[in-house]
Length: 299
Image 1 (tube, rainbow, N blue to C red):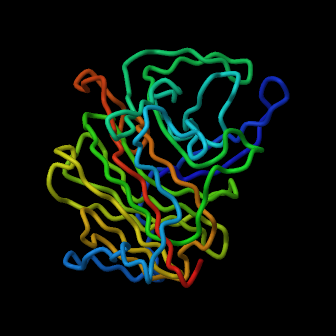
Image 2: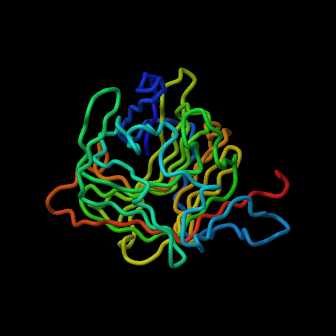
């Protein structure tokens, strides 16, 4: 989703900010992935305790976000600016702590049409929207990650809203702070609410970024709750929507790096296009739960 190419630049108070350049998703011809679009295969039975063990979960059953598991910005958060964004992707939102709420058994990310002006590198910039995100990554570039995993079955149950430029996503990013790889479990482009993007990113032998991206057409994914998952194993990634396989990639390019979890509600950017006068606000992405299971042979 966020094709992260990073430079290091100085910011106020002598801190370092990892600047992000994002490349829009484009299919690259590559013969190494073997892809399947089998629709009838069920998700693995992760409740089989002889095979699987739960290694991470948040049911969002409290009334506040569990800060032992989550942070509310990317690893490159600018503390002085009070939030973060993904600037290289030309997104229109600024992520704010108060745009995440927990209650009623779910976490809710809320995007509003409220301009906010921030100061970064001594320069002021105004973002047209405020929104929310959660990550198991770092509260800043030098801290430890809250949680990361290598391989496993990652699942979230979500209810999202659409609209031009609305861009909810559930994805994995390497803890090394180097990009690629990346695994996008789901992305919805709000102007096309019956389509979900499923993508794997990697670097070839020359270090050039590559991706395998598929668009899955189905029902209106903004109607009701849906589950999105990947079973990420050595040399293979299987994507599932509502318990059914939507895509499978078998490749030597599948990442073996530890990954952190991100769920965010972006507004605008290169991929979905910007929000406009037709986009209703507020927009929300609700998360009923996030669960990760590992194979017991690997634990």
